[in-house]
Amino acid sequence: MAKNVTWLAMLAMVLAFGMMVVACDNGSTNGNDDGTTDDGEPLPVSSGANTLSGKTYFYYYPIVFSETAAGTANGTYTVIEIVLDNGDYGYPVLVNGKYTYRDIATGTYSWNENAKTVTLKPALVRDRDENRLLDRAGLRRSLQARLDDYRKEFGNSAFNQELAVFGFSSVVAYIDYVVNEAFANETYGYSFSTDGTALFLAEALPSNKGANELSGQTYFSNEQEYVFTASGFTRTDSFNGNVYSIVTGSYAYNEYYGKKRVWFKPETVDGKSRAEFFADINVPDEHGYVDDNAYRANETNEAFRTTCDDYYSTSKTIGS
Image 1 (cartoon, rainbow, N blue to C red):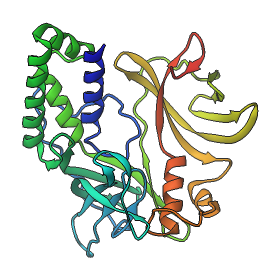
Image 2 (image 1 turned 30 degrees about the vertical axis):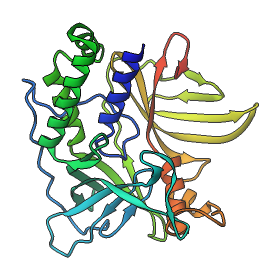
Image 3 (image 1 turned 180 degrees about the horizontal axis):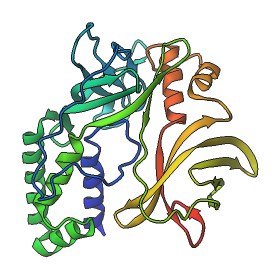
């Protein structure tokens, strides 16, 4: 059991190297069919004005977009996280009552003003074991060393069995997957609050796979009720029988390590769009964000984040 927990923890950690906006991985890879490492697809050509210039996307892992001059081909971005007083644990370190941050990924970005999309291409990602930013080659070396240690600790048989549990035929296949996921381009839709102070990003849903076992059905998860149409959902959140939130949006269904999974992309929360939700947030007297608009943006991006979970068509339930 301890061995399995170790592997699960490691997998979760390495998959967190990639873009931090993503709520849950969709199991796709950007590797080549022959198992070799993809060196990375190029950024799309930027189009139109860069309205993200100098903006920050506030969420659990904020993204700071560089300012760009007119005619610039692309910009740079930095993903940051709140510094805690005990490494990756503990309480936030505050300066003058505000959060402090450290870099966990850097890269370049391009934009499409007409489509309202931004594409990010990672260049460096943080290895939490080494506590530094690594490029593709550096991450590959770090993973290889870590896996070599696991093999010595557990033995070849147990080691290979654990690889197979996650669908990998070899260490090379596992490392290729992790590196390609960590450095894969990610494209998001973007929008702003009405006053232009807050940036919102929206993850695209994965492609549907298999039969739609959700359309026209009602599923349950604890005190949540999900009502599905052919492409949309309504989630009613309750506590002790009292409704406190209603979320509507679109969904997609696919598989993840052999399990049926559904992705939810909210479009309204209690009848409000992102911009309306942002404008209606009451800000507490004290918080760790740089200003009240950053607090509102974080709360909005949390409420409208794309989420996913396993579903069970026989019991009509979602989640474990």
